[in-house]
Length: 304
Image (cartoon, rainbow, N blue to C red):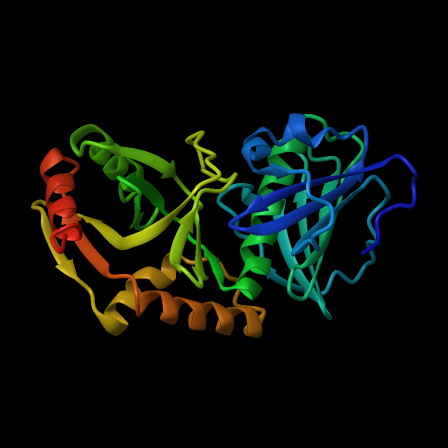
């Protein structure tokens, strides 16, 4: 898991959801250039211990004939170019480059706190996309050790409160957020794909991250989480609250965790139980219209 001992190394740090993500990388790999979505999160602090460390290496990956157990080869982002293996206490991610002649390798320890990304020689075209995606996957697992869950959601900021819209891909999360931006005054977008939710001493907060899907919205901000709302397309607009177990079941599919690490997966469930005990969950069956946004707004904020 150690990066090359080359003296030409740089360290770049980011604070995401109040966790420090540290990259150790060859100096000529300019992270500020290839990771443009991370710029608002960069920090200069060096005396705090990093929570998550990613080494970027130009050395050959320690590949053997035995890659371990193939856990999955399904990826929306990478299609059949992707593989995810478990070998002892190491998780190995591979992505074949776009030319099909070289492979990216990511080796992570059991809890993803330490990872090394091995960069293929002909990688300039995809460096930003692959490192951004791999770092998102790493952060999504390692953050579970800090009472933090990354979720697949579109989040709006209405007058300092965060509302997270959940649902299967294609349900209309981004569309519903845009309806709020258009029809609910004093509303702006926080993140459109992968925000983080964290339990803190001050309450439950939702954070913008460098990962926002196809919408460039990379805000280093946190908001008190007002509600989760799970969306479902329907011929009419209907809103119902989902208390207790129903709320847990509604939010669980949107949470990021790999089931092959039982400790992390169990930790995610524990974190989610705590969050659901404090944050209400709604179910909105809806059309993609202004009335749906207005109905949702009126019920989420009806107790104020």
